[in-house]
Image (cartoon, rainbow, N blue to C red; front, side, top):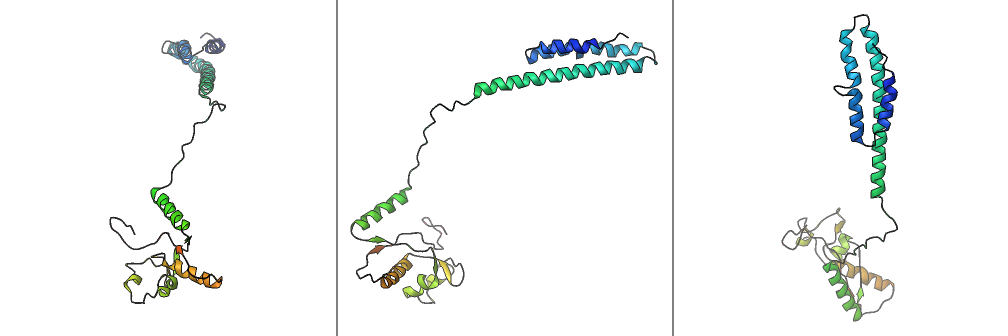
Length: 209
């Protein structure tokens, strides 16, 4: 059988001259296609004697591996070139002005609360705040709510533990404010509003537990 090692260098040249994947597939067919040079050589092994066939088959496989390696290398090069071209076309021009970010707005409830606070502030009221987790004393006892009052029941109040609750109203703020006024020698009248979140075990059209 004729020496086929020259096909490796020929294939390398043909693959290198392929400027597109389509060209590369056509060049591949010349060597590895159904009627390619190496395919024909493999088919010709059947005509050789049993003694010649192993050596000839091994030689053809060496050439085939060389051709396939050249094909793989060229395919990767073309793919890399295509990706680089695509990236260049899709690159972001950071010198372009950025899109303006739209600003959100305040919730209607927040806006309403702010207007109410401004109104009361304009007539001399202070806006007082207090903790949302309250003690049993400030939430109930200091407001003269007796131990057997329904408001203390589990079905009306969220208990953290026996001594602390999620406040069920903002009245505890009044107690705390008056205590502080006493400590700081503030004199009556004391004018405050105490807006804020409260927590009740209600579940209806306008409340959620």
